[in-house]
Image 1 (tube, rainbow, N blue to C red):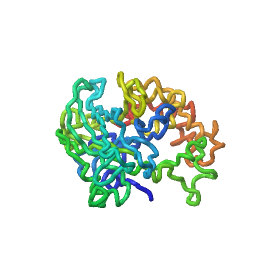
Image 2 (image 1 turned 90 degrees about the vertical axis):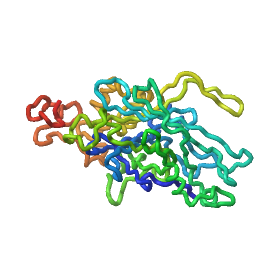
Image 3 (image 1 turned 120 degrees about the horizontal axis):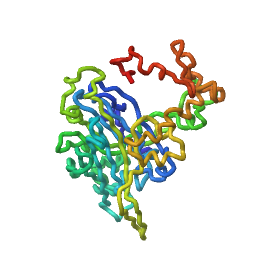
Image 4 (image 1 turned 135 degrees about the horizontal axis):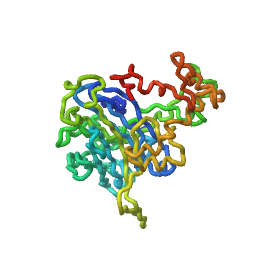
Length: 390
């Protein structure tokens, strides 16, 4: 029996990453087991970040940060859950005049075993690995924090109907969806908050991608479709639904936006996980001490997975985005482009033929490795007032 949790799509949360508050531009960010150190610490591993204008309430933005890759839904009796010694944070930037976060949400989780006499996760109305959380908010770069959720509830995994619905031996819930929706809470500062297990929403052909980019031998086609390497796996999500006026730097509502490029309505979003520096193991227990150190982060789509080389991946995870200029060389000449460029190794990867880098786009722009692409347009008067203005 599979014990799949409900999809975030079924909870009315459709994934896409935010770019502009006013019009809800979208992109995606994904990162599963992408770096040598973090792959050994799944509880602190960011898998995805999504942000988008809420389809059911366009005056709000939904932000979703996912953690813990490749959760087998039936992985009991110690089912996957958030780490109790991890700081999970969502960072928001809405001002160009500051250097740190302008808004930060921090989540700290606690866990209790209500019945230590059983090996079952749920029995007779009690839960083991019962998880709750505290959410704090900072609007001054982390100098001060305000608790906005004191005891949030993380729903248990969807173990099965006897554990979830049976009133005699289980929790006696109406169904699993009722547990999920009842875990959605309203913070004292008005945000809607949910934390819990969900079906991993990201689609990626991992096996094909990491075979030197040759997604499927012979190329992708109806007869040879991509395969979702994350299908039937769960992850743990932190979801926030936030009024746009709360995210906009001066409290303006979306109706005040002047255009799709209104800089007053552009924000940056990234998520991270941090641990204390020292872990001490004792007989039957462990503890953490020392300063907090960032061990994982995510923001731009697939950056650490397919742009940052393996020797720098752990350094990327520990860095603040404000210092990302140190990684600029990998963005200027990304490795994967070598397999989409006939002047390099493109001929060895026929599956990427449809993405072949153009040598004369619009008749004159060469996008191959070490060529200028659209850079030759920099400073052109025709770009004034457009997104391409440099």
